[in-house]
Length: 188
Image (cartoon, rainbow, N blue to C red; front, side, top):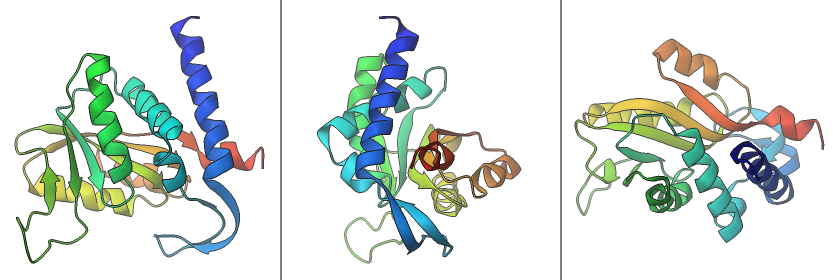
């Protein structure tokens, strides 16, 4: 099997898993505050061994050719992705230590906003599970920039197509997603 057909096979497997375990219909309020008649709850898929493995492999394939020293994102959405991607990065001939950005600094412990790998002076990739307007990941972008890191890319498992790409383009930050919501809506 060629590399391209294997990539397509992995993508199709993840699509089927997300359709079964993450995609749902019904009125719901999103993190952006917007209401929607469909929702993606990625946690069941991200915390599933098959889902975690597929996501990690597809993320790392997307990162081929992207110069980055570390990978991370905003709690809670990115946290289940970070460890599998960091671990599997060695299989791809690179070492991508992980970090996460707290939504707020705790008043105890190390009191760090960015925890895990030391990102000062490094180039990082920001992961997100689902991107709507891009505000959540942009919060992580600002936090890592404040910590002295440069953002090479924001990478989301799924882009709802509701403004994130424009937000990142205006900020000069490359953005990619593995899937778009319209792919799921077309078959639902």
